Length: 59
Image 1 (cartoon, rainbow, N blue to C red):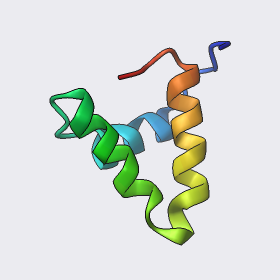
Image 2 (cartoon, rainbow, N blue to C red):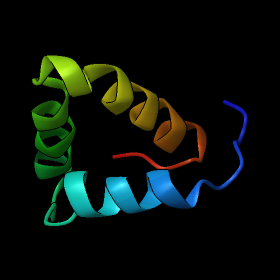
Image 3 (cartoon, rainbow, N blue to C red):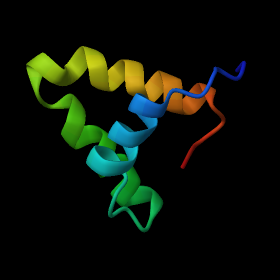
């Protein structure tokens, strides 16, 4: 995957809403899962995940 440019707003949303208290790969996966459960936020959450993965982050 190619790297994408740093996006401060996405980074803060990922840090504060998704991975803020994840200490294991399982907890990290649950953080992402909890975000995609909500219909209205699903598109944004999926875009955030693609952004995060393309930045080279992972489980």
